[in-house]
Amino acid sequence: MGTKNRKVFRRERIKHRIRKDIQGTAQRPRLSVFRSNEQIYAQVINDDLGVTLVSASSTIASIKDQKVTKIEKAKLVGKELATRALAAGIETVVFDRNGYLYHGRVKSLAEAARENGLKF
Image (cartoon, rainbow, N blue to C red; front, side, top):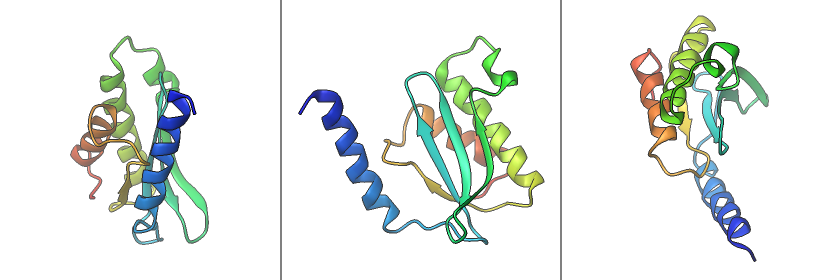
């Protein structure tokens, strides 16, 4: 097994362990984060219906055009997601780090979402 496969496998194991306990409902949907090498994506999901309620990513034109670091882009995505969620009437969520460690881009996205009104 190559190094990349080992890392992906490890993250998948952690992800399944987290998802045993975290479930997004209509009252408290799940805020899921996906991080690739260049981009970061976040979505608010109602797992009861299997529906994405709100999403934001660093591929949005307003964020993509800015020349900032990846951590700063994650902050912008968190801010955008929080404003969209509040506009949709979502105030509280359950945070799903999706197997990633809570530092760097994942942490900055979460903190920016909290600062802009989301509760978790």
